[in-house]
Image (cartoon, rainbow over all chains, first blue to last red; front, side, top):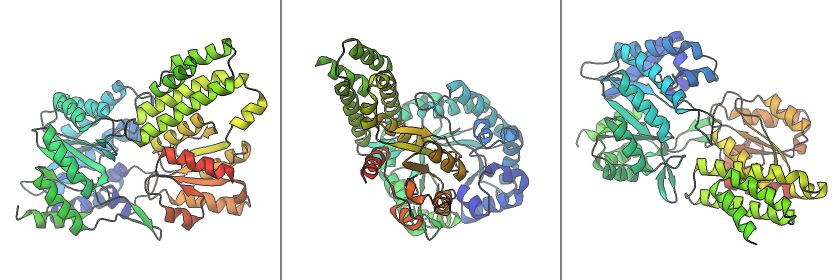
Length: 274
Length: 212
């Protein structure tokens, strides 16, 4: 979504959520492209829609408006039998010793956003790109308080010499334990790593939980070539990795940074036979 | 001496109070402060290696860097000015470019540079090019470290270099680029002085550049 908005001309220093109000037709077209490509579910354009995140760009007073509008835009192009997921991303702030945030700050922010998304009728929550399990936990607990709809909790791991960990040092097992206890219905991984490294991660995640698993890798690590941002993994290779991710028993798959409807189309094509 | 091992331990464990206590104790015991500082410095390098190996993560690294900072704040006033000068590796201005609020990698590099002995001026995130340059001139920095996590804000790094050239002060600073999408090609393309894979290599690179 983010990459697509930028491609559609989103200026810097502008929250992508602002387009839910100022350019809803453009947002709607992107959502529609995903459904047309074969997506069963599309996420709202609310990744950075918490108060803390919007306030960092001086749009803190727009939380209600941006999040409320976002849901209807996806719903308006959502075919029968498909779903609208309420996207919830990290606040961008950190607990001590890295930053000065508190878990109360996290809770308040996620409660506010989740409530608006639920009131406007999302079918599920998709909490993603969480780098600190404590922030993810706060988000899941808040979402659970707000509505009795499925909660996806997706963590972003990096590959270290000792295996997969969040930047805060949370292991896969640690994350699973906390997320299950907090009430997540689906446990996932997204962002930071490419589809190739995601395969082994999902194998390990499957060993750690019996819950359904979601996987949304990047199309590799971004490179700048002649002033253009390029994600090196092409849709065909990405989809081939996705097949292995599904074989490792992931239940929900999709794409993160650098992917576009072409990737979804390719995934839909190769998964038909499975 | 036992106290040197204690110093190392305090830093590796990120125990701020213990690090301060040991710094004060070495003053009271009139120990050779250079040796004390060396012990602390060894420890922080060890912490860097632990991070590199995937044993330590961001919170541990930040805590150790804070402990190091706390100890040095106590010791530095007691080092002679010539000692401080030989110890200071250089002055750095660091920040995340305008339009980009990603600050975690930059904060990490700033903490490690400080721990290693650089004088670091951290401008935070979303910093305009002019602020980088004004600050660098004001504090007479040798190094400017500029972070961009978004491919859309990386052009800001180029803008900084161009501005330095335009003001005829490009030679006064070494410019290091940070951020996941930054590549060696990008460094060459815009004429910067280097980039590193992570905070630990960034410190190594900064030290190498200061020797030239």
